[in-house]
Image (tube, rainbow, N blue to C red):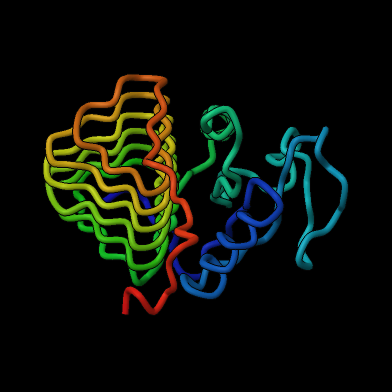
Length: 225
């Protein structure tokens, strides 16, 4: 099931900000690993310390924290449908860093085929007939029941639910509470807005959104209770 971050393992987090904070909490407090430093590209370097540990330019990270001794976790989401995240992944691999999966202890991830550098949050359920590629962010309460395939560098927001034999290819954004019908394929660079029901295949680089919500000015909440 891929390489996992282990207890007491020394880890570098690539990225700063909210997402790095969330990932660091899982690493330090839930898994028991140790974040030893943060790293960002020189052009984004605005501080020398973050949460009490050093911040090192990414271009120089292997001089201070060599890949023979430290693993790296990609702790940012990235723009342009996660192409920046993919670029960082490839650069870190070229440097020789191990890119383990970060899986919250409450997640039930039984997939036998899982790549590298995935971030999987609490209460996620992935059945053992499923497959997961590299660099995905899978938020809390996502459900992959059986024979699902997740490609590379996708973001599955909280409470996404797939049905059997459905697949999400690569570089897709799947919003909160999206439901995906069985045997549906969502192709590369698709954007699926929150609350959408996906009932047929989604072409590459297309956008799906649900009907808009709207108020009922003539109604009182107690009319429905």
